[in-house]
Amino acid sequence: MIIGRVIGEIHATIQHPFYAGKKLMVVEKISPEGKPLEDYVVAVDSVGAGPGERVLIVDEGNSARQIVHSTTAPLRSIIVGIIDEITTAN
Image 1 (tube, helix red, strand yellow):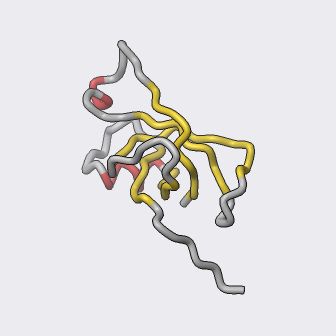
Image 2: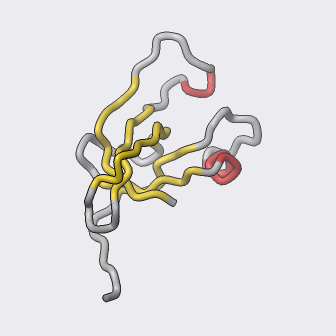
């Protein structure tokens, strides 16, 4: 799983039918402390995330397809949660 911060949304006029009605978000990967990791992922939003929110992403195709209940969806990354707080053991 990946921790990230939503930094944008992608809009496409031509897309695979699976993506009709779904939001594609650009998510900057971050450390648990909130520091940017200089990488990003494009993920389908399944939880209603918005710009600036910290999110949890599944970045593995089979797991992502199980979440949307499809064995054939052209999908790799999906936002599965909005993070309220991160606590680490020191």
